Length: 272
Length: 253
Image 1 (cartoon, rainbow over the protein chains, first blue to last red):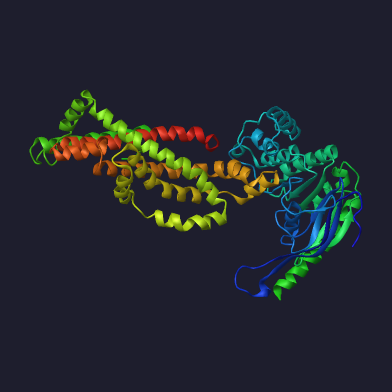
Image 2: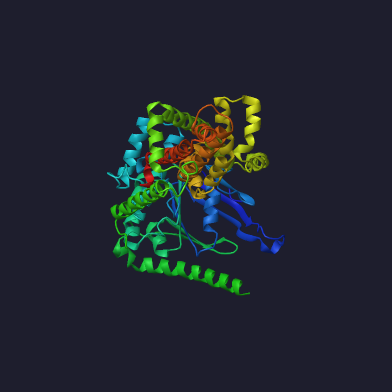
């Protein structure tokens, strides 16, 4: 096992996750979501995990967030094992998970309220993050009055205001239309550059991975493992020129090949 | 006829009510029915005027309303936190489930003998009947309501640092409030049946008492007046409740 270096934020060490099927007692029904998976995330890194659906990437994120515990192995956050749900790892869900009965302001204040932060401080901080995600003027709106993109911005502000060490994003833009997605991707990159949070971002879009990441991991399915690791050396800002460059195409092909191989393999498994 | 506006349907409803009362009045006036069996609306109205003048109608209505409200409030105030607690804890749900299952099928009427024995013909006895009649069903409504919460919201709250108690107060309570209120509205109707039956059996005032007393003296108009008053009071409370509901649930607008 590699020693954990000082700038390692998260260390996943030989993690196996098996979901026991509830029907019947047959061992064969158990699903091995992750098998002997090890990886590290460095402090301030923007790591994107790419993989086809069902490859266990959400399972991995849930383990890091402490929603679930590994069947075997362990996960370290700043050197100490994750044993339960921790606000240090702020999660952004694809379905936004905003509280419908709270206004935008109250949603963003939620984490601070849980920390029993004084009312005024809470409000000032919430105002700041609502401004950062460009939702000034919507403080008193309820979530059901907002579009999908706006909801996800509230969710990002809510997480940022809680000042987590790590942000975990589980396909956050998958439910949005292409235009909105692009706007939010750019906004996220700006936020990342300014606040330098460690980010783990999950997606099944290779383009999204190339646009956002500083490092990319490709996951394969059943059992979930890391097939490939790519340091994304594309220059910033990753505008249209970059997206048409040879290096971009080269990286895209590389990732596509390993994703495709993984998908083909899992289809063969299913056909057996 | 096609009804395409709310004012039209209101007009039809009013007309229907007027026709119903007119037919009833006519049937009685023309002597088809003995007034002892069914008094005419006008006779009920004149009884109402008499009883308003001597203050009895208002005092009977108020005492029944007060009993329902006190019993119902106490029952809801206990049932809401308890239901949310049980809805979020499998262990305590398992502990209390058999007791609730035993209590739930008991009609409030069945508590009347015991409550009289323990508490006498008192106000507390009336409150306890309303409480016993509405507590167990309210509790079940509330437990059911807590199950309608999206588990993702609970996850999100915990992820933002909420403790289990915070989750109950900040997520489960507000999240299930629309269903809880819908359930309590039904329970309020049941609370009225509880109090009327308790008053029919043993009371010195209240609409149930008024109905029973009217029957003793062969004043069928008093009996019917009592019944009409129950309907009107429940309708008025329902309207008030609806206003209250909108203020409690601003996000559903």
